[in-house]
Length: 82
Image (cartoon, rainbow, N blue to C red):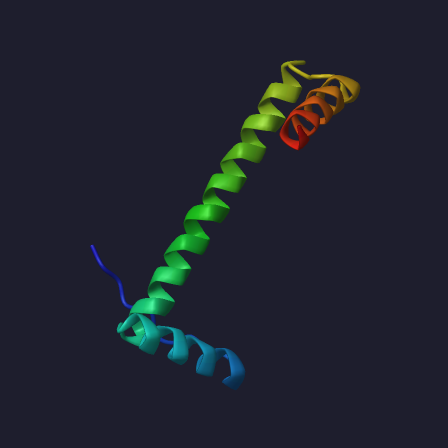
């Protein structure tokens, strides 16, 4: 099912940049805006669900000490620099 939005209001600079990008991609400006909104919504939806999972884990007491995480990331960074 596809619903139509009534309008999106953008400042002139953003609208011009969207137009330039759409032209470079050989796509309609409306397609680019719809695609950008879909990607934004998907990313934010993922983020909200990940935060909810984290809260649920914390509520269950499934926590990892900060120093353990820091040590893991420090080791990973050191390995990448070698």
